[in-house]
Image (cartoon, rainbow, N blue to C red; front, side):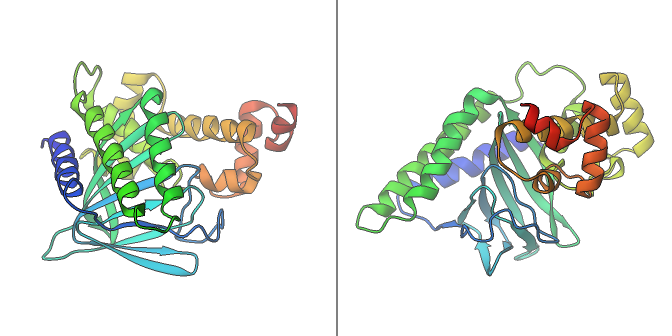
Amino acid sequence: MDYIGEMKAILDHSIGRLDKESLPCHIAPRKGLRKMIPGHIFHDYPEVFIQTRGKTYFTFPGSRLVLSAGEFLIVPPEVPHGEEIGRVGGEFETLVITPATGYVQCHISRESRENKPVILHYETFEQAEQVSIRQLTDLIVEKSALSGTYSPYIIRGLLLSLFASVRILLEGSGKELKGNPRIRDVKNAVLSSFHESSLKVSTLAEQTNCTPDYLSWLFHRETGMTLNRYINNLRLNRASDLLKNTDYAVSEIAWICGFRSPAYFSRIFSREFGTAPGNFRRRR
C-alpha cells in the first residue's frame, strides 16, 4: 500500500481545512508530569495526533479527552498519557507526528489490538528537520495559553506551518532508500516503541508478517547483530544521553527507555558501561 501517499493526503486535507477555518486543537494538560502510571507512558518530546477516522480515548492525570475525526491533539513532553481506540462505522485512523531528540517520525495507525492503536507504517527523518518542527510544536503549546481575539489565528498559523513542514519532508520519502525494506520497517518500529517494556521480537515479527525466527535471522544477516541486541543498544544509548543532558531521575530514565524496572536498568547499564547510571552521570 502507498502509506506515504496516504500520509500526504491526510496532511493536505488538514492544511486545506485549516486554510479556511480554525479547527479544534487540544493541548493535553501539563499535570502529573513524569508520573509513572501503569498503562500510561510519557516522553521527553511532544507528540502531535491528527485524528482522521473513529475516535481515540486519551487519559491524563486527573482528566480524559475524546479525540474525534477532524481534531488535533498535542501532548507536551513529560505528560503521562494512555490511549484506547474507538471505531466509528467500523473505522479508525490516526497520523502521529513525533519531533523527538535527533529525529522526526511520522506513523499511521488504522487497526487495533485489544483496543490499542497498531502502527501500520513509519517514516523517519534526520535531525536537521527535527529542530524547526519541535520548535513549532512547542510554540503551539505555549501560545495555546493566550487569550484574546487573535489567539486562534496564531494557533492556526503555527499548525499550518507544522503540517506544511512535515508535508515537505514526506515529499522526499522513499527515494534512494537502501537495504531490506522489512529491516527498515523493523528499525523504525523499534525507534517508535523502545519505550514500551513489552516490546518483543514476536510483536515486531507479527507487524512485519513473518515468524520471529525468520525475522531474527534476517535482521542478523542484514545488520550483523541480533534484534534483541539492537533494541538494548538503542535503549542504552538513549539512557546515556538522558543521563548526560537532563535531570531525569534514574527511575524516570528507566521508565522512558522501556526497561522493566530501575534495578534491571542499572544492572544492564552497569554491564554495558562499566559503571552504575548515577556514577556515569556524576562523571559527566
